[in-house]
Length: 171
Image (cartoon, rainbow, N blue to C red; front, side, top):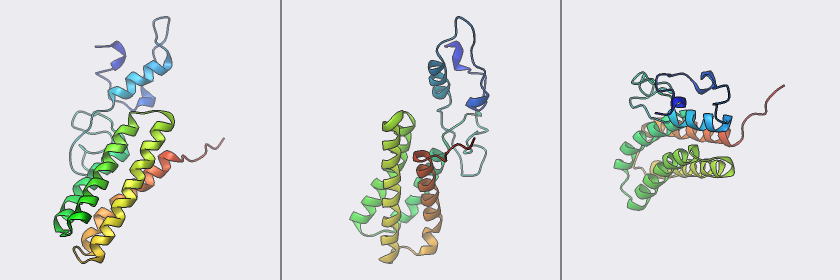
């Protein structure tokens, strides 16, 4: 195990000790290793200790938008099962999966490529919203039945927008 993997440390990345001295790797290498260390995904229900950004089942951190996106995919399944139109059902399935996969891929990228993946995930989330509204409009599900999914999709979309356009830092 590389000494910078900090297998015993379960803290937010900004609280990790930075190596110093002649043997210390460049800062970028240190943070790359630290980021990799915190990529493991907890499991559990939304709001439980296991699914929170710092999960109790191992205490590992996770990208918060990824946690919400996974909950969104769980909420899509019952809605998809009620949609009788094969094309709409397939589109909802592919768009919701695209959200989660593009977030995961974007989290592993840097620079413009990272932002492009988040933009694609945002577009897929918006596409999922419209597919749900089509299902509501055609009477496959009620607005009340789709409320939880629509709230999760809205939250994922908002988080992705903020990742692409961070608030300006105030001095």
